[in-house]
Image (cartoon, rainbow over all chains, first blue to last red; front, side, top):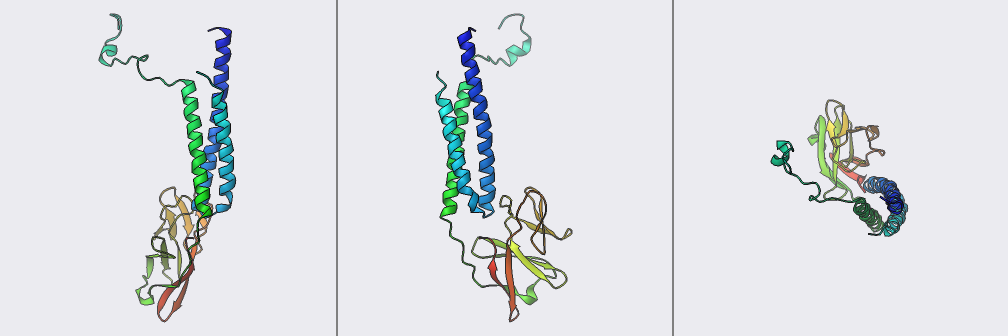
Length: 68
Length: 163
């Protein structure tokens, strides 16, 4: 593996780790939102949804950096 | 395969290179898809909650006083059909009613006659049968109380319950 390929692998791994962290945060938001929704506490749902959308957009942007 | 391979390789011949292999790049893309799905789910819940109309709680007869069990429960639907509530007779002539839906993830709670507590079988949540307060387990909020009134020998549900 040459230096350029190694650098690419590092970038993909870095993006993968970031994605994994953001994905876990989103999972937490979904579970918390579901708990609040079923419990009738609707005040937190929009902040959770908006945060989740922002995280999803960041994830999609990160993935767009990966080329074949 | 070559002659020096152990016999299990011929019996269970899985060629790793030929099986479907998910690369890190592909897996990262699937993560992003999952991320979009979770955002859609959160938005759906928020939208549904925004259009949610609280149910008007009517005054409904639940049962006659002489039909009350000495110690035990009576299941009824309040404030609307499909919204189950539990009327609990404590055995000392007093009774209370609560929504049957657990405040954790919505499972149906039941009355444990031996423990004298309301129990959620899904994740072992326990509620006080007189106040609906959380005693143990993952639920964070008390069970919604259904207010009761006795008039003319009949127990009426007059408000509260699942919203």
